[in-house]
Image 1 (tube, rainbow, N blue to C red):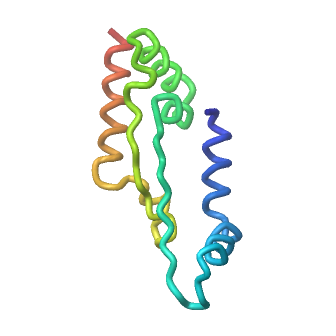
Image 2 (cartoon, rainbow, N blue to C red):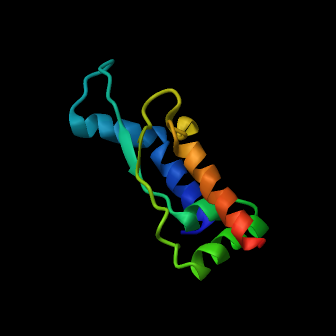
Length: 111
């Protein structure tokens, strides 16, 4: 998935028209709360595509050389209908996991 794809998906998932469509699909009345929880499973390529090019390239190279391109996928459930939505995408542990993958890949690619 390219950087533009990730941004495009986030744009589509956070549009008010999507929430209006979901409200209609579930038959929610005016003022009735509706909770939307999206499931995401980003991998090394998705993570690397939003980093500066030189760093993303190093991480992809590291993962390819070690056969780990698909090894670090992890599922996340993000409540996108809340006030924080994707901005809070760092549910407990997610930001730390991404940082660990980045640090490991960077350390190993420079050695």
